[in-house]
Amino acid sequence: MKLEETQNITHVVDQLHPHLTFHVPNGLTLIVGENSEGDWVCHNVLLDVTGYGKTREESLVQFKKSFSSCWHGLSKGWSLTLEAQQLSRKIKSIGVQVVPTICDTTDDHDSQTVQNNP
Image (tube, rainbow, N blue to C red; front, side, top):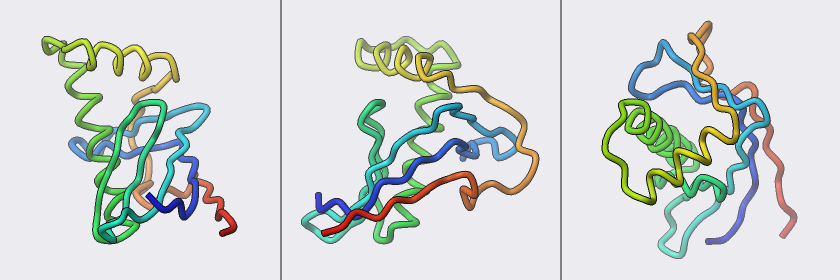
């Protein structure tokens, strides 16, 4: 993947339940770039969660959907594979909190984008 930028997000609106927001106190660092097929990729190394899309924005939306799905699978107490158990521990270790969505945070106004020089 050709690295385009890193982005730090502190809030992710739950894609399955938009009235809830995942608050990550120290933020999640996302690596955003294009892969060899020209698709955009949004990836968090710590959680190993990835979103793909035809545009940068679409890859971020897909990342949020993947993150939301992971959270819901863990919170419902589904029988977890070893990999899912490891993900559960990682999510708990970064202190994710679920809070009511107060306003439209889908534009990630609490995110910071850092452009990388080529």
